[in-house]
Amino acid sequence: MTVNVGDTAPDFELNDQHGTPVRLSGFRGDKTVVLVFYPLAFSGVCTGELCAIRDELPTLGGDDVQVLAVSVDSMFALRAWSDQEKYQFPLLSDFWPHGETARRYGVFNEDKGIATRGTFIIDTEGVVRWKVENAIPDARSLDDYRKALQSL
Image 1 (cartoon, one colour):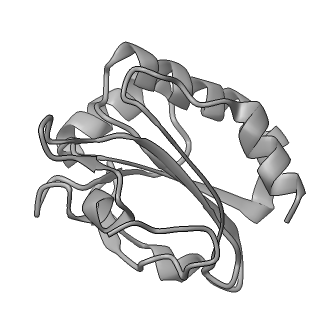
Image 2 (cartoon, one colour):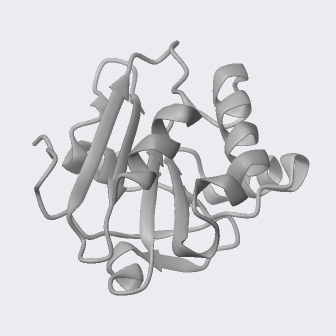
């Protein structure tokens, strides 16, 4: 399955790095969601991307935008990484069933067993308004996120 601009974003519920369930539809009517799929915690490019989001979050829309970052890592690995890097947004575990949410969005690499670098900006009505998918080694641009959010 592939999710495209204009589609209703598939709902999901995943546990964050603290074991708290987070449901995508819980943000409807309230916040725009930047849904960021990434391959693995503690890897170089992923750390760089998520640290940039952490550092630039106020310029990405402030309180009206919720970042949700998703990988196939366990909740325990995500907690250790979050504590180390001081992430202030949910890191969601797509651990089991392995990669199910990434598959539903069309950003799961079956050969490697991890998500690719897919980002979906979802409006307050639950509709995908922007998306990008990069190959596993290629970081995404925060400037592109900023432009997409400003166009909403």
